Each structure stands twice: as structure tokens, then as C-alpha cells.
Image 1 (cartoon, helix red, strand yellow):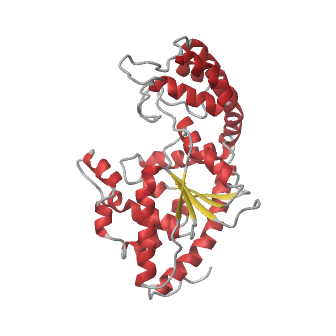
Image 2 (cartoon, one colour; image 1 turned 90 degrees about the horizontal axis):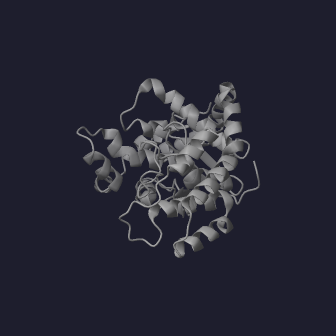
Image 3 (spheres, one colour; image 1 turned 180 degrees about the vertical axis):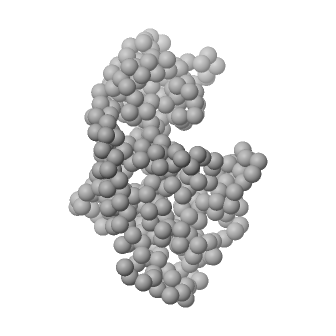
Length: 333
């Protein structure tokens, strides 16, 4: 474990399968940086992924793909804990304890629940109580800090409220986790640049394991101007600028910004330079990814070892919470 500030971080990612550039820029680069600064618990939250329809036979493949991509990007099991949520049963045990103090009114007001429930004819209880399990994920490790985007602030505030209620109802048990607002670049769809990059939009996402030829083809076809923008810099062009800055730095973007301002930008040149920068930048990730895909037992061992270490922390916290709530302490292994 590297030298850290003494603060503890928890962050999770859903196992949606292989990751793309939007995931890399939005979260993973930050995870890699934080593991050198704080004690980090990184979790592949497979229980959360069950709240929406999925194919059971694909779940383990999705978990494995996410783990491979995280490790290939530089998440280091020697500096952090990287594990699967369902391998640490204390997550769901604590979620039940917390659900007994969680405010129903606050759950009803969760924006993400409202948005997702309107898109489905049948809404499951898991989708409604998702924020309680999320609170358990964080509080189980007594995390001081949680890196979040603005869209997750409401969920984190609920976790803080649940911690306060548990502490007030029983006894001081949990710290109130503080948000760490991420300032990561927001990568948009290559085909619909007003929407976030997503695998659900064909041709939208560049996967971390994509072949060089596919990367060049996707960037060549990327939307620049859609004809109805009033912005000084169209969203599609701004997205290409963001990607070029991510891989080559701001100095590489500056000539194109100036050319855009005077209406002399050559999109073909921009796309060609960007494509080569992305190919070069993803090359070491792709090589490491292929190495890990060929050795699934290594990935399984890493996840298993980290889960065992995470459980050592989790069992102590759950035992403390049980005692404070008037239940028997959890027996030691």
C-alpha cells in the first residue's frame, strides 16, 4: 500500500461489460490517481446491476470484463482493494439494518428512481431501495470521502442522512461521508454529441479494447456540426476537442480552437490527429487487457484476495452496528 493521507475512499462501478472512453475519463483515471493519495475501496457493484433487466448467464462475464478493464487502466491491487460486491455479504446485511432507519419520504424523492420508474411498466423494490444499499456500500467501510458527479450528490446526501439517523437512534457508529466532486472531462457520444457516450447508441462509444482500425473509423465518422446549432463551438466539435485534450494535452487543441474561431478549421485534420492520439494512448491499456483476458485465473485471484481483505473491515463494522442496534455481535472467523 502506498503512502496515503489516512482518509478512506469508497467508489463503485456497475458491471455493464467492457468499458469505454467515457468511463475512463469520467471515473477510472480518477480512481488511479486516488489510490496513491488515499486508502481506496473500489467495488464492482453487481447487486446494483440486478435492479434493471439482465441476462443471468452474462453477469459473470460482465463482472470479469469490468475487472479486466479496471486493472488494465492502472487500478493496482497493491495500492487499493478491488472486489465484487456480492463477495462481501456484509453489504446486504448492513443494508437491512440501515433500511430500518432510512426515511421513506427521502427515497420517494430520489430523482434517479423517478426517471427510471417512468421508463418501466413494472418497477421492482430493488430499484426503490437502491440508495439504501448504496449507503451501506459506503458506510460499511466507514469511508470519509466518496468521489461523485453532481448527478450522484442526492444519493450521497441520503447516505449522510441515514448515517445521522442510525447514530441518533442507536449510538455513534458511522462518520458522515463527504463528497469529492469530480472535475473529470465529460465525454459525449460520437454520433449524438448532446448525449453522454454510451454503448446503447450505435457508433457512439470507443471501447477500451477496440482495434486501431475501429478507433480510426469511429472518429472519422464522428459528428461535427448537425446544422442547427447556435453554439460558437458545435457540441460535436467541442467533444473532439475534449478528447484531444484528454490524450494530447491543451496545447494540441489550441491551434484547432483558433481555426474554429475564424472559420478555417479542417475537421479532417482534427479527426486524424485525434485518432492517432487515441490509438497511441489506448495501446498500453489494450496490451494489458489482452494479457489479463488470457489469464482469467489471475483476475479471479485478485478479486478474491481483495474481497477477503474487504471482509475483514466489513465484519468489524457490521458487528459494531449490530451491537449498537441491540443485536448479537457478529462472531469472529
